[in-house]
Image (cartoon, rainbow, N blue to C red; front, side, top):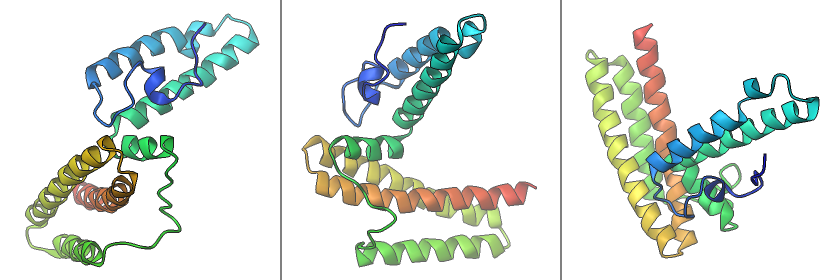
Length: 177
């Protein structure tokens, strides 16, 4: 097999290094890679080729997941620009944004105890979806003009929104049980 698995995710899939990606092209290329690299195709191959196949398929899967998920793609683009978002150690955040996050967290807690839990959850999820769309647009604009400081700030805030969306899904999953 002759292609460079060491390329960045965008180059691996033949995509320009940009926040907006052609999802159809990404999926087509991913499927082509899977057909060529799937370990089942290497069952009778020598040990080295079988091991390479597993590593290559894992690399392609990781790259695909990163590029198809907007927030992961945003963080990856920042990393390619040499920007670390320091999500574990950087506690500086806009106080207004943090207040809004506290309000949303309280709304999630209240939704779980509400008479119409699903309706209350839907309201919170709609607000979170709107925030996510805004974060995506602001990030794309910032990264497009090379403003990695603004892009980093937006990606960090987007992570908070994403975490709240996951928590809302967990509450809904508990309701379904």
